[in-house]
Image (cartoon, rainbow, N blue to C red; front, side, top):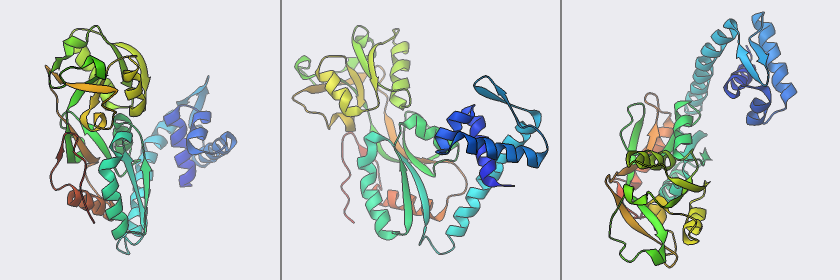
Length: 304
């Protein structure tokens, strides 16, 4: 059985269509169709039925999909184990890093590449929720995520602890130490991260718990754009301390958020079970740079 054909078939099912699968895999749609047809010929029957713009698995297709996921995971594990025979002198390590947390991983990357120059680091930059999904699907070895509560489905190592604050135009803040309750935000317009960021859902949940639905004026993936929008008085934002520290204090300021005040862990996460030698080496570097979690807006201070 051709593993590439199996991978293409599984991606068609995941994306619910040949066109979206082709875009995800960066190949042409005819290539996808040809590989799926070859797989169907090998198994002697239809695996997929086209329904409008989507697809529907046949009974045989469901079996191939379920077992195919296991086969591809085992094949990936085999490749990693073979690459590790020569003691991490080569190989790959796929990492997820949120756009606002790159400064935490920069000294770790420097240390890792100094010690293991033959390992190819592949970095994926997305929000915490997207990183979590990629870890669960086995598409990333490790990722730096944000947690407001323990997650039994993942192993993790905390590198920093953060709190959220309300970001407002500087001229509206006379006392940055004076707390605000979530209920105090009821009448204020919001600018938010997009839904693939953990903070997006957190803000919606806390507003709901406080008895209101936020007036969302704009959503964006970019922390610096949020700062500009707040300064222009488009809306207020709820952000982490390490992000707020990068804003121009002449343009924006912040106040603590309480009732409730929810601490967040910036943590390296991975699936329980086998860790490749490269992933274990990465974890060791993280522990060396961060023997204990940083607090608030503190930046890492590590010298190789």
